[in-house]
Length: 172
Image (cartoon, rainbow, N blue to C red; front, side, top):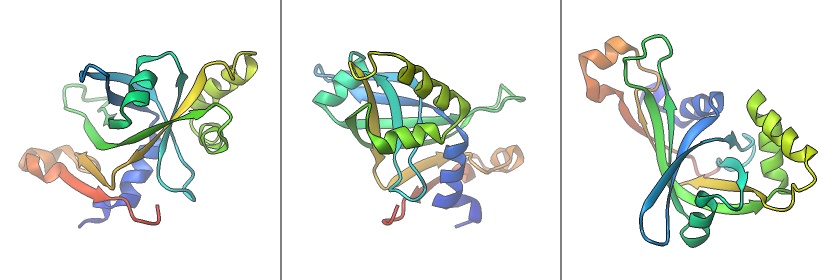
């Protein structure tokens, strides 16, 4: 396994981003996907992602029925827009947490500027405890990756080269 194809490398790339797509399953068995911003748990904690949202949204209602989710983090090429994006994807379980959850708050407050702005905006409002929640996503142990850390030339020579799986270490 190359240095680029280990959990530490993939985690570092995930921490550089804050946009992903969560897919949930509703009571009718239909899937629902939506783009969100996410924060990553502290590197001292078990690996997890947090989403700040509202209790009334479909993703929350679906998770209350079925906690199984899938998650995709795209890594688009900003200069060569015609080139397919690299990505990390995984399945996992989700849990609805109150807005007061300390780990989720810490993850957002130590994240990107947009995460800090979102948290600050909710903290300014009087209704923050009335419907604003966090979703905690705990991935299954395997993260499925494509193209991450590979040059376009490497992928052009052999497209399958870019596909790899990393396992989240037990201690994470």
